Structures are given as C-alpha cells and as structure tokens.
Amino acid sequence: MRNVSVVAYKDSHNQRAYAEVQFFFDARLPSELGVTHNVSHPGDSDFDSEDEAAGMVVHHLAFIRKIPVVHEERLVRRTGSTGAQAVIAASTIESLIGGLKVGGEEYLTARFTSMLGRAW
Image 1 (cartoon, helix red, strand yellow):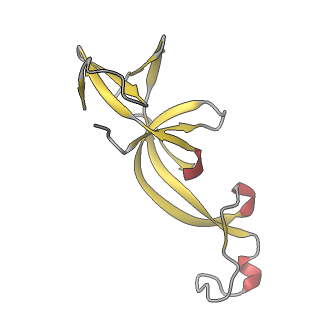
Image 2 (cartoon, one colour):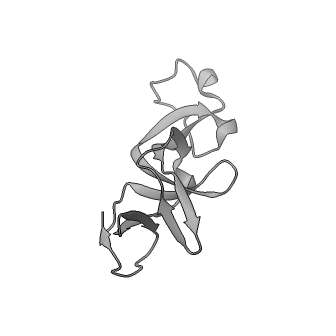
C-alpha cells in the first residue's frame, strides 16, 4: 500500500529529496524556466496579443511540503512530520514513495521492502 502523495524528486542541487505533493497546477511563465508547451497560438484568451504571449510557456508544477529525512545505510528514515513548502517542476518527480512504521520510526520506501512494519 502506498501513499500516492509522497514522491521522490530531484532538488535544485540534483540530489534526491522527498516531499508530500499538496497539488499539481499549470502556470504560464517565461520559457527560460524550462519549456513544456508553447502557448502563443490562436484562441488563447489569456493574452491580449501574440506579442505578449511570445516567450511564455505552460509549466507543469507541483506545490509540495518537503519531508525531512536521515539516510541510515540503505534506509531512509523520516525525521519530522513536515518541512518547508516549495514549488517544483512536475518533471523532476522520479517516483512514488511508500512508508513503513517500524518500532515507532517511519521509513520511506520506493519499492516493496518487506512486512517489517505496517504501512502508514
């Protein structure tokens, strides 16, 4: 059993980090932030003219709450219930993460580990 709102993603330093996704959304922002879909096409009512739309793209984003963790050998232990809030590109999400409780400690797992504890 997995909590589908918990994910592993690449942070701004290209390191693996963990978060709870609060919600996904799209935003029209300058293309320098990363290209996903060009919005300068006829019928786009959010812009007054194509000149205003030039250089803007739709970015697929996720509003997250970071999960503080500690790495213990091959295990990832959750050290707190909540962390800082942030917005990340949805494309940086690597995988869904599950959780196990073992002896009062919470661990994150990217795949089936064992029945050492109970899923949360």
